[in-house]
Image 1 (cartoon, rainbow, N blue to C red):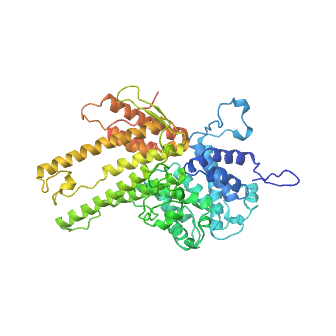
Image 2: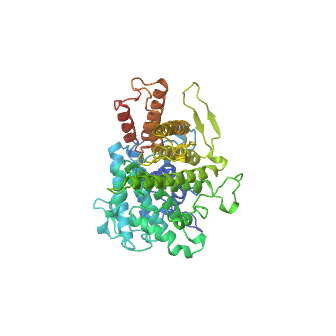
Image 3: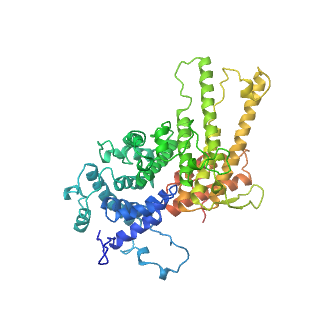
Length: 530
């Protein structure tokens, strides 16, 4: 890119290549804010563009993600900053070249992506400047000159870490299901990392190992302020969220070690000696100012708890073959105790929330069985509360039950008899199932209500899994022969919200729509408005 300097006293470069300037601004206004939903410092949206001015690797990573996100929505770009007539928009808000169709945007995105990956490989290999032979063959002479104009970032720089994070989101944007996990696991074929202190986002499991090393290894010997740069912390939590989502979607365990409390404390979490999240509500009896956290770290604490839950779900019963009936009962009791521990950790997190995590405005349902709407002043809080209700549903539906090989205890049955009969045990289990369904529906309705409140783009793209989970609960008719009007309403709202996410932002959500429609026995085009 060309750099522009003004003033005789201070020379500050800026991107003035029209296409790159347009895409860098678009990245900051859209994709960067998605990545910053749980970061009050807005590292990706506000700090990265400044770093990108002097770092071609970071610049081409940003514009590649921008171009791909535009390709996913046929080049549509929302007007930022409120109501304004088209003629009064900044020229930086207009694509300066010939109008591009979807394929044109795809080619543009791939061009910048290939260049960014080439620069990334050279940076990871320790090169100071990329040789011409390492750049894409179809790169223009101007692009080659621009790519070689500034030194490559070092392997321990925030610029390199941020670039890998952005390139990983580039892969995630249209990925779903097993593809998402393959991007995490397979990205390591792009480059090889041999240095201990490198932390590239797109290299699991090495990336996870290196984060662990940096967060719970020698870093412990540093002062708290020096442990993590802002960039590394932002990338760490970005990876943690992607790691959790990938593990949930593919029913696998997470790459990051959720039991390494030193690592999570160094990432910013305030935890009690027994590993519970410290309260940040000033009215909580255990509140202390030094252990209170800002909203972004409170939100990230739930991501950590979700990772624990996902690992519990993916492990299943984890029973060796040939185990005795008595052993089965013992194992089930251990699983139930672990489940109760997760339940307590979620409850402690929820009880310690400040008021910002509760909706400030509500539009009640107009009719019985209708859909309410909830609005939160801070979009981050809206998103994380959807995730909380998602966690509660998943936890409820993965509650272990004591094996029928071992009689229920009085505590298990919540009854007074020390040796309940099989009939009483069955009644207790039926009551437990009924309670699970009732509580699940309550949490699912909260997810839909928050989504109906239509928060910002970042909140919406993070709502795909919660909305899908709500659909699993609310979209099933209690009567196999006839779908009630209420169930029909929930189905339409959930499908509409999911389709809107992919239509408006280009974030993959249709695969969850297809899953729900298949479950409900409906055609693929159900709910599409004419």
